[in-house]
Length: 430
Length: 174
Image (cartoon, rainbow over all chains, first blue to last red; front, top):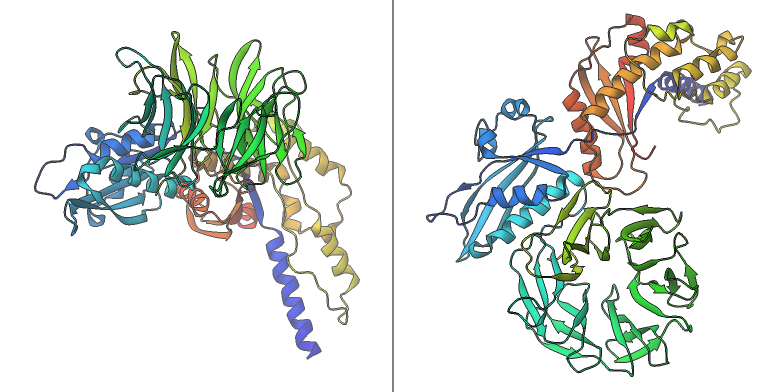
């Protein structure tokens, strides 16, 4: 037995010596070029023509944040619509990394279509995803956005955000004398007005399941927090307290709202229990505490306070009510939001008299300025953590702009009309 | 040191690390000869090369080289040769790697590459995955896009010793 063991050990020693000499080369970075994708026009096998082309919507989606470059059909050498028709050489010649193709058929469900589609890794000559996406023909944009999300997820490893929506406030302009709380797709399409009033509307905030919206309305003469169901439009004001009632922010579980009340004389952070309909005070300070945001784990809140003399970002533990200051750079830091992983914050930071959107790692405290415009405000983070949309000014008009978290891609939201403020990004919607 | 100027391309920093022995012998009843023990301990030291010039100095400063602890072949090839070809490989992989957006910290994928002397990649195997499929896939795709390394004409014993099979460590957090 011992002999066997020692033979085994010797063998083990020999084999470990051979692996010892294996060279390791570290690859620490990649190419900066965008990922090249070809989306072949989807083979349309329905008896009527398509009004909007799936491949065009997908192209616009994937290119919106600068991570992908999508080859237009006029640059293609072939138009496969099934796996068998793919000649990888064609796509390698065009320097394509990923190929998307498929065909659309009528679904068994009346008024629906189903798109069978494939994603190919051209270099590895391999199908990396094969699926059927179905939905109503009249909501073809939604079907396309859902496909874009899947493609994004397969290639980038994080959720796509092309099916998410944006809420924002339109100020009165032109013929419309009202403030409007609107919701649209993230690309600006399918906009609807959820609520409209001649008095100001402020601080829209999505419920975690994306079915309701909380906001502040001045329709009764003073600020009051309302909750509105998106599908039915049904709305109700929550228990009104003396003074300011503002900045509602939904808890991750959806059972509470953090908000600001000034019933004690000056603004502090409170929690509103939606099942018990009661308020509970969290911060207590003679300074102004405002703009709460709930941490993804539900254990703490971010808020802005001037308790140190200038507006700075603080974090309060909800259970212990212990307050910790997070920002120390500069004399103006406000309107903070947690990143979806809870590890960083995004906020408004003033440097040299100019208001920028900045991000800071909570642990290290390192501040990084993202936007290079001025008068930037109200940042809202995409549910996958990759993009920030914020309100800014262009030629004295209030507009919405966006920037990727790496600061590489900047964009202005088109197709939104009028003067727009206070964007709020929806959660991932099913 | 003058030999550095003979490089045809500028070397970029490459890390060469020799793996630690994977198993530690715990059974005390079996006595291991003292010299093997010593050898094991020696081999556990990592050789880290951050810059070829510094590396050369480091290596020349280790003298005299205890002969029994090093394989003769290793001594025959200067570290700068290994570093040069590692840099060539690193450069070609990096130019083809499109990192996915997934940013969970500490994603590392280790892939064993097998080459033939022409530089053509004939086999790839993930020996340690990152746990995120898209990240592992992006590394495999980068290798597939390289297909065949250029500029790896080297003495056959150097190729056999270090470059027929080696490990690519995809570590964007470095």
